[in-house]
Amino acid sequence: MRTLSRAASAAIAAATFVAASISTAAALPEDPALYPVQGGASATWATGRGFDTCTAPSLSALQAWRASPYRTVNIYFGGVNRGCAQPNLTASWVRSAAAASWRILPTYFGRQPYCMFGTKPHRYTSATSSTYGVQDAQDAIAQARTLGLLPGSALYADVEHYDRANADCVLAVRRYVSNWTVTLHQAGYLAGVYVHQDSGLRDLSASYLSTSWARPDAVWMARWDGNPALTGWPTAPDSQWAGRQRAKQYLGDHNETWGGVTINIDGDSLNAPVATVALPYRVTSSVPLSARTGPSTAYPLVRGWAPGSTLSVVCQGIGQPVGSTSVWDRLSDGSWVTDYYVSTPSNTTYSPPLPKCTYPGPVTSATPLNARTGPGASYPVSGAALPRGALAWVMCQKAGSLVGTSRVWNRLDDGRWVSDYYVGNRSASTWSAPIPRCP
Image (cartoon, rainbow, N blue to C red; front, side):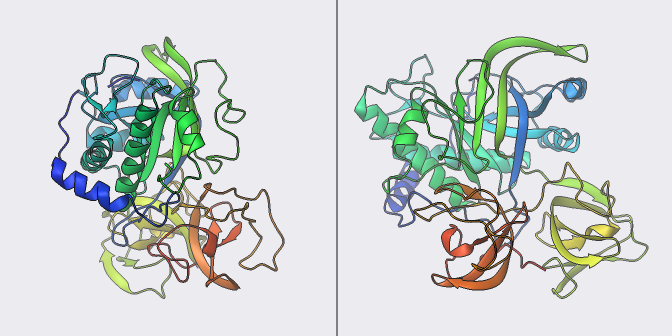
């Protein structure tokens, strides 16, 4: 991997306090992301091919590369070990790339384990790894916010190949990744890691169920074998990170030319969470458009948007039918408007590049969790069960049959239902804001 040096923003003493406070978290390893109740948080996922390159390409280069098979572009958005200047990487660049239907894979090149193979100067030991895991995560959150990467985005820590024969260094990596994960979750972000197949992936796989460490939400594995497959990995079973939580860097540095533009890249395949970015659209109604606290006219009114005004749309959810659509748009202030009166590409269904509004939580059941056709245990099982640690991509919640301490059921973005009792979020007994109610 590649990456301009930037000092981490948090004080060592404060980071140490936070690291100590999370080490005894009862929810480990399935520490949940606490999506902000206020604001337009949502997760986004990418599938198919992507590429990473040292410096974020110009927007004109990205436009030329629409002729390529790639639809996700990586950005190195911070970290003291980042090695390349980023003259193009601004909030405006991020918005424009997302509006052009590029998914964005954010990577933070922070401190590295002291037994890393290579020459990166800024490293951590087992004694400092917890502190630096928190500190790097706090800086990553600040840099992400500056670029407009909203809560619900997945931020990936670069963990380069290291000597896993050194047990103390393996401990350092686990401490760093666990504290990185919990600190991002506290701010409502998903936590990813870039790891080598023969070091980081092996060690995180071995501690997948450990109650000592918070498990990252996604893994991006480096194995330059030319095979883009996201299953059949030799150092992590398919049952781990099984809910759209995997990416693979399958080709190393090489040049490719598309649309007359040549870029030196690594090749990636993905089925994983990436960045969430708000996009601008216009109000098309002839009267003020009502924004509400949820996707229905039954929810309280927040404000009215004048005809022709610009909305900052984060994602799209399902709600009360209006006109020809049941789609509602969630705005960056957290409010909802019907999509029928917004200038998205369709006023009958969902409109890429906007993602569906989702709030993924990890499956916590010891055995695979059945998904069903409706919100209750009496409904038929539908599709494959979700293994422990898989992300359940929740769109909305509805009351159903009692399971454990909860009657809440989660509607997934593929239309299936799972009991909320076995999904990690704010509550195992009642509704979990900011997830809306299902219509």
